Length: 377
Image (cartoon, one colour):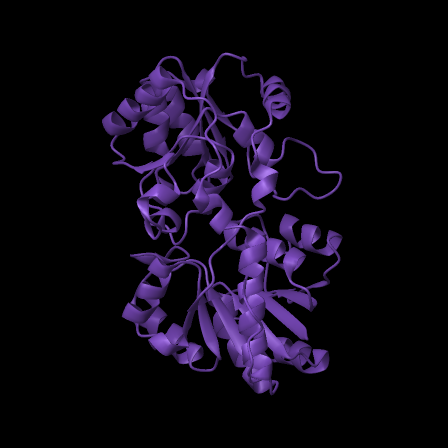
């Protein structure tokens, strides 16, 4: 089977890195087209052995990208096209139909309660999404919560399949030597109480509240992993709160790292932390929370469908909390006072191993192309 993946961009982001992980575990011939931004994840995908083509799309209304993409689909003689992220889903489904490829799977990575990839859930956004959705074979939701949102939005339930995001679980196991080494590289004392967060530095993630909460716990330091337009504002908040010397923003982290990459990997950064907090109130999955649980960290989160869709005992180290500064500070003090040992690997982390997700996706491919799904174990 030969599959073309179409994605909006390949800078460092959750959906982009999820695609790379899947490609490492799917046992078939794959190629990738990125409509824009062939960034660090594109380089990683190519280093893993999968070709990447940059379409050179200049914006949402670059209609000339549609025939260019259709030509690529036609020349490649693909059995199936798989699209990822809003713009790629709209253009990719349409291009596949123009090129004569009738089997199109689309993964919905970013449909939140009030937005999709930062766009408000407007009538126009919904109409365009649903019009192009009819051109595909099935729409994949990354969690049961997203599946419910898709159905509420108007996607027929019989066209929705759930294949969760995943991680390479064993890579995230706590490593004491990595903790020591990473803290040394970052200038963090061995006995420091380090609170961590991972995600795009955007206003919607509400990291400013975490900065203020850490500022109110004098012993705490904050290690934030990610990049985005809110970086400067977070640094200003840290200075205004008197915690500039206790807030460390290390930038985006490609994961898994490409050979030759400098700086600590994400598992190493998680090993350097003592607690993990996700303050985002609107998530489609919550992959960073699952990664933190796999690293044995106590986790507090505002929203995480990956955990909320499971039985309560699947992730005993995680708890949902409010995100006011006072509530966050109280939680941080509680974890600091308890100073728990590294927690054992929870069932949730094993459930979301990427190899399992790849098998489920492969079964869906087989059903779309051959009409008979392979067993998804």
